[in-house]
Image 1 (tube, rainbow, N blue to C red):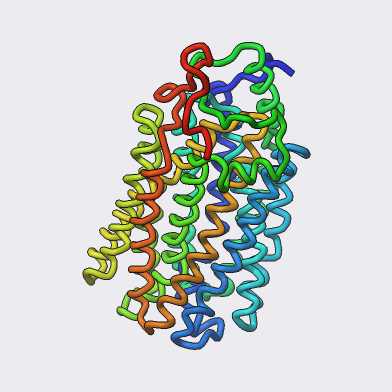
Image 2: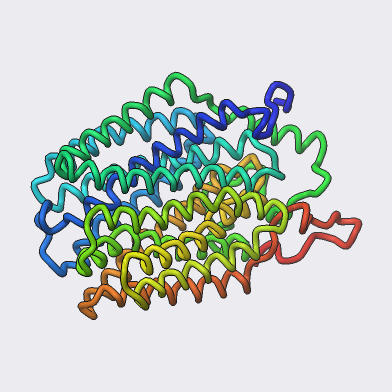
Length: 442
């Protein structure tokens, strides 16, 4: 298969890019509907005992573990059955979620619904990301990832605010039922009717690279077969290639922040007198700044590279988390949430773009899936860690310090082990110009 008939670029594929952006926003809506109302009303509405930090975070642990596995599965499936089928299956799995939350007699039902949400997010968000990378150019990857994550996390923020108001108007259960069913049914309709499968673009890109190598060849891992096994790709992403190891560990730790915002932020704010809608706006500030800034930070990395924004993002985000417990009041908490959101915007699209930079199109879907496996496993590990930290100390503030310190340390590891991955700024050296480039792996 050649590149003829499969043009790549945002402009060239603007209709499908737009459809994929709508899809990821709806994916954001699906997770966002659980961000404000469910943790804030865990005690009064779903029977969770006050101070049960480990039980409170258990639904995030379940979500992260399941989503991590489904990211891994989605990458491999998408290379065999196509991106569209995986996306559609993810939305089918989401159909029972709003009903389960509406009916839930106890917290166990919330955990079960969150397991299905993890399947949905692992399949659907992975596919929106992979599909857009299939149909856009290498020099647009930062912008592509920025657009993707902007749309998704603005969706998360909007859903958190809308469901807070819906809960006040209709009651928590009915509000979430109406909002959730509308989102899932609309997404299924749009997927079935308008979304195209982009796997042919990935195959055409592979053929084009064989016919005419790119001007600035990427620094792909060395000693890897053209179609590596799942075990080979997993090893490369996890320990064999030091750059991919650095990226994967940073992705895992940055999800500690999202676990904190999801599970502990609302409870922390409720105990300090914030209203449900007030919590929605404070948490929404984190999401809006994170989502909106990615329109700039993704594109920025196409010019200045991925490495520095990723490292600085880890440290700035950690500083924002620490700020949350260093002051009081809605304005302070909103500013702190905004700082954390901006740090997340610097790193979030650009970690994924860095993976895409240095993995060949033939197995890029698998590589992204395994990166997302490690990244979203951070939900589970982070939620367990912050639940233990808060539970052992009896204070939610301890969870914030656990996450902030983790972000600073992980950023240091990324700075030490990582390198610039943008092929224009750090291309592979041809053999005749000095042999195989160094630091391609451990």
